Length: 449
Image: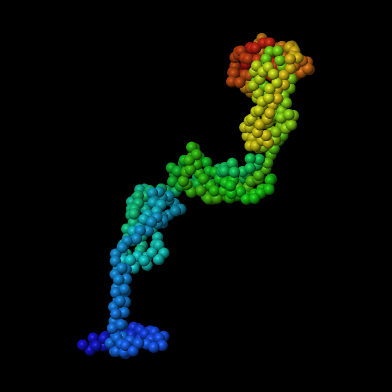
């Protein structure tokens, strides 16, 4: 009984100190703000039970609020932690593991107070422990260490089927490839590319290592730093392994990145535009002239690699003049030769001029040459080794043409040892003139050297 009395005195002191005294002071302050407080209000406050009842009401209200909070936090609830990364423990130097889920979902179950604390704390690791397991297929548990004993958890998935392989390695020659080349100015060329290593080591399961056909250092043109033409720059490149069909093979590559030294240049060459007519104009007319762009811009500047530019002597413009009987203007799009990245002109206007002052001339005994004969073969003509060539064109043009301006040849491409009948082909230096061999075919004998 004495114990309960002491407890009552203890709580009475706490209530007086924390509730009654502060409320009394508050009421006193309010009372002083009024110049003439009500006598009845003053008498009511002076009663001994008034402050006790007010304090009791506030205490009950406070208890209800706190109790509701306690009930709320004590209620059982669940929280889902989505997409948690999985950490795998194994001997990475000697083994490769497949079948590990990229992420898991964790459901935490417990009262809201514990869940709140758990969510504010750093997320613990989700772990698959493979130490001690040998190569083969294994079913292993996925574990999550939750520090709070008041929380239960479940993992989805909770079990993983993994395959452990022995790690093998192989050395591969490294090549360089460019990404997003179209983002570079068409006038520019990337050349002299060289990586700081010529070979790399690939590691992984033997079945994947065996698939690798090539390893490439990938240089993204979009990430090139500022440069000056001809200046050497260093660019970091990521490495990728590919199979024979160009599919990426997931293997470890060492080193993972390399630096590629390269330079950017702008090789160019100015070449003439050459009109090449196809077909023949009307029988009593001849082509006297081709006028390109009113004799302005009769050449074009082309851009590409030096090797490509060295093989191009002119840009051909093909015009169909079959049956043409009067002066005609053609607008023609220029076709970019293979390997050319940019041309200063995309189209031209060609005026074809005709004349009725034509002549037919024959050039006798024009020698016949051969092309495309295999290096292991020789050839001898059987029936003829020269032909007369007929010319038709404007008189002032054909009168100056000689045998040296005419090319007569036979194409022996694909022919082997034996006797063959082949077509005789005639071309000339002046495209305004029509060239025709008086003999259309000949026989040759091909022999092994």
